[in-house]
Amino acid sequence: RGGGRVVASSEDAPTFSAAAFQAAAAAAAAAGSSGGIGTAASTGPHSAALISTLAEVLKPMLEAIRDDVRCEVQEAQCALLEQSFRLNETLRQDVEALRKEVQTLRGELQVLRQ
Image (tube, rainbow, N blue to C red; front, top):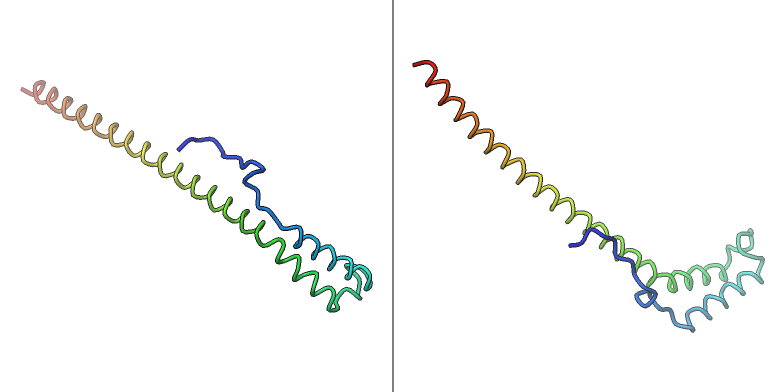
């Protein structure tokens, strides 16, 4: 895997139907005419319709974001595993080199003792 980050193009972005946007706009208009969003009057049925419609419209976008985050996490995990493997291999090689050096030094010490 490459170390770079993959950036999605606009072609990869989720698409939403015009009908869903019109429904959301209609629900927003209805909520706005019934007392406005964020007011005490916005707790009525129009507000519930707006919330429901917005939830449906935003669901594909949230799923796409969730998938993107999941992919980024998997890429990061793969990068960490690869780094761990390389470090482990380097450490193993260093330990092997030290073992050989210790063996050589023990042989030289035995020669000096004789």
